[in-house]
Image 1 (cartoon, rainbow, N blue to C red):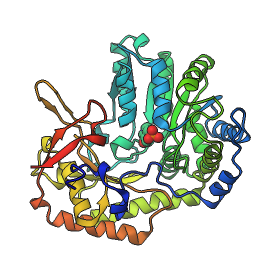
Image 2: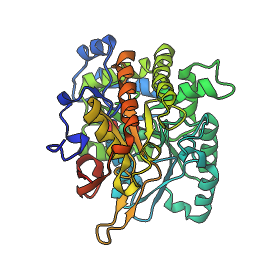
Image 3: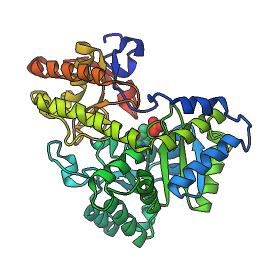
Length: 430
Ligand SMILES: *Cc1c(COP(=O)(O)O)cnc(C)c1O
């Protein structure tokens, strides 16, 4: 830990027993995906694999222009190079870290408008990932529409407990945005998990297939950014998909300079095959049923031990509520980071702080500290990797750390980079 400067991103994976750092790019590929990889067409331009990928994305999203990128943030970078800039404002239910960073790097402002119950870890609710439509309407009223290039909705809401967004919320946001002439984009990383929650929880969707539900979700939007490392069930890849011809043209112009030719965009032909196959498999209901149920299992076991978690269990992860877990450690001493470090030291489990290290700010001049809304530790569960007995071990370890919680101490940041500090900051225990 000393060598790693108390930053779990610096730990060698070989030194981790159960790796719950992220569910991004950590899925196991299926036999059919490997078979697709063998068949990948590596033509520079117009490969067969690209057309299979393009057709699959079009069938699910209904969006006309499909632009492959090496991962989700590359799609964000291209989108906000075009749509961002000084004075612009981009609202979202909750921006993910890379989305926020790409918007802010363009000079624009990223605004989070989660529903009020969405930021209360202990409240129950079917769709705590929803955007606050009233707050959005106020924003549209107060600001010049010219300065709002697009609205965004992250499904599921990864930075907010992995909570789903309802179809009603997507539809109403779409109506509101379009009434103001503002396009709506989905941050679609976990669209299939979100679709399955709609099927389980939203009246009228129980008998619809998750594919149909996903198609309806996309029918309300003008574009999406996607990290295929999540619900694409692959280790690398992403895309930007849009309907607007002019925007697509501008995006492809940037793509050629920064990613690659428009029919591969920073990926190998075999990667495009694996994504196309993954997008089919991720909508299979037997897969989704197992996925959502196995995450809920971990949540139930932890709740039975009295461990405070973000309720109810989300789609991709269980989020420990570090503020309640370690209420003797104030946000400025990073309780989430302290807990994540202890889980590693105690049980070799790697998790990820999603709190004031990731989203808090320290003014470099005055030293003034602005905490994040929530102090969470995400136990992200890779897809198709761990078994129930692995998860039983995790539950046991978290329970043991919970029992000795009073002995844990806070952390301080020794040095940090200007953006996305959680990846490379150096820490010291207090
Ligand atoms: C992972 C993620 C991204 C960024 O995708 P990368 O492939 O990691 O670049 C954007 N938004 C959300 C919600 C994510 O979970």
